[in-house]
Image (cartoon, rainbow, N blue to C red; front, side, top):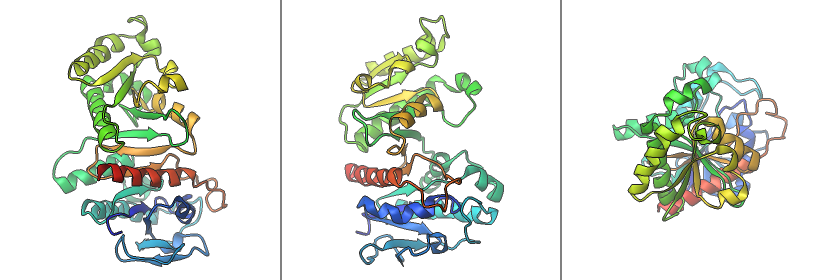
Length: 327
């Protein structure tokens, strides 16, 4: 079991993460939660363990204890706990990189709370995990963010080529190199992590109607189309650039395994509409498995008992399945 468990990081302790951890036992996935036991809901049955694979009683939450500076008040992030949130992520990555766990599932963080409390310099989890992996490998680790559905058929898998930047900056940021990297990472991950031997990728255009022959922008004709032609010549199965407004109904999704999109909302709006509770955030390109529920800290309902574990359960199951595919 030592290498078979997933590590579930605590995320922001003032959010819904502490409530989701014991509820996630319903996933049937072997995992160990890393965080401060004081932050768990009252009455949680847990057992502290020294290593991810240590045995625990049935129905107990395995806890890799990590003490924080302060207790947690639901809905009110404490700057004193920001450093603890960051340290948990780094510690979990270290364990996974050393082969002591099968993968990583991260509960939501508050980037604003981490910036205010600990000067967190990364736009989000994805970029920080790439940094940590690169530090271990002493080399750069190109990554991409995928959002993958678990409850809709055909599945919806989307990868934004540009992520956390203002919309006005997207045209300049969407370079040939950036888009090519997203396509190649997605193609490789579908083979390695999802067991799809010959991935089919659909690539969205940047402009409405994919530029409509250049009348609504030249990027689709001048940048995206030539890139896709070059990659097709290498043997990649690519369609596009496609109008984004007709890519995500069921018959369209049946024609591809993942969609590479130009920017954040172009990718995330369809999947959050189609599978809000079952969507999973996956970081592609890392040397380890990383998934996360596709929602935030939900400060507004933290501590009320209304947290929905569906996305966390889906993320744990996807991490288990991806680890099996890599094995």
